[in-house]
Image 1 (cartoon, rainbow, N blue to C red):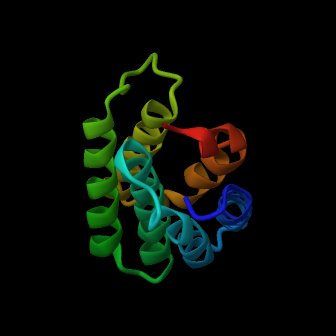
Image 2 (image 1 turned 135 degrees about the horizontal axis):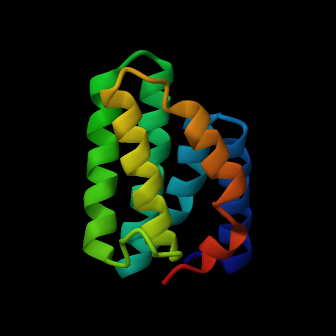
Length: 131
């Protein structure tokens, strides 16, 4: 990480953008940090970025791009492990949100209200310390 204080500020800004459904800005803020990460942290934040990019695609009517990004993010969660219905780890919670969003998309339902709830009720600043 470049500067931990700067990185935390960028992650915090990204979370605020994500909660406000400004998915492109969330992607930008998180990507600024992601570029300097390695290992599990890099994989996790790439999945979070793909979640935001997928939502951005959805808002622009690009359902295929949305589906593709969310499937890639789900694959990264599987690589990281900690997935299961009982998992309260960030990877498991993220995977659950991705699976729910993909199911909504497959059923021609709008997945964004569920993502809005996920952003507010589940994602926390504790996730910034994921390793």
